[in-house]
Amino acid sequence: MNSPPLTDMSERARDIFRLVVEGYLESGSPVGSKALAGEGGVNLSPASIRNVLAELEQRGLLAAPHTSAGRMPTESGLRLFVDAMMQVAEPTREERAAIEQRMAEPGPIERALEQTSALLSDLSGAAGMVMVPSREPRLAQVSLTSLDANRVLAVLVGQDGHVENRVLTVPVAALGASLEQASNYLTAHAAGRTLAEAVKLVEQEVSSGRSALDEASRDLVTRGLATWTQDATQRPVLIVRGQANLLDEAALNDIERVRSLLDDLESKQSVASLLESARDADAMRIFIGSENRLFALSGSSVIASPYRDRDGKVVGVLGVIGPTRLNYARVVPMVDFTARSLGKRIG
Image (tube, rainbow, N blue to C red; front, side):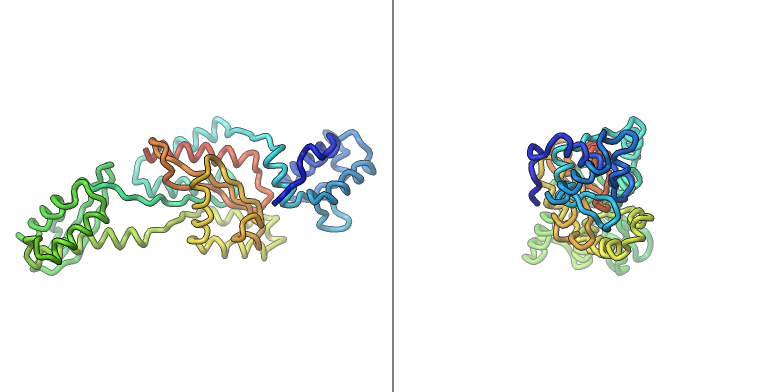
């Protein structure tokens, strides 16, 4: 989307354009010449202001949704404002404290990701999104412990300290000595490897007959590793929270657009693919309306930022999605601060 360069506009036109955009982003309604000439506006007559508005509309930066209404920015106008005129407002001390406090809460990383998505939604008034990082931790230990006659507790411990538990239902014949043998075998062959590497090694040893396991133990080993392998493929690639925020009063006047947006969000794989494009970005990515085909019909904007671990490696992407009249100046630095805070939490 190409916008006219800012240098092509007179200072008067820039001032009026900025006031229109800021007024629209604040109220969600078109801004008229009388409002621009009012208190705190520009020192011009409504007639002179209308002439400038007509010029900006001709440039493709503003549009008049109704003949008697004021003007609102087009997508090209919003892009010019965001790229060249916007003055960001850093998160307040209270907002930073709320983000850091939520990140400091103990629990598994999946919980932190869900909380991050909900937090972004609460603070931005839009829908929050966090793309779940693909995790391939190296294993420290895999143990099997009998719970009762036909249930086994399988515990996977990663070298990063991450612990996951699963309960397996097994034949009674698989317990006893076979359980101990299988547990020892898993730890010996999984330690220091990723789950995928451990599965491949065990499959090779079992199929070649080198495993020295009896049939019951082999079954336990296969079940134990298969549980996590299957679980990893079924985990959501995207966590979305706060869709209800999209149903505000202004949205009710454009219910088809909101319905289209909610349908798009249901296709989490497509949204994740969009966020994936922000992984290689050095900083924030802002998609406005039809700049991205996925949200072209709903006319929505996405603000996304990669988040990194302590080594600076990008491990995921987070952001918000909402109408194009998002408060970009407030939301952009908030997303950036949240991304940096989540990176510290992940380590």
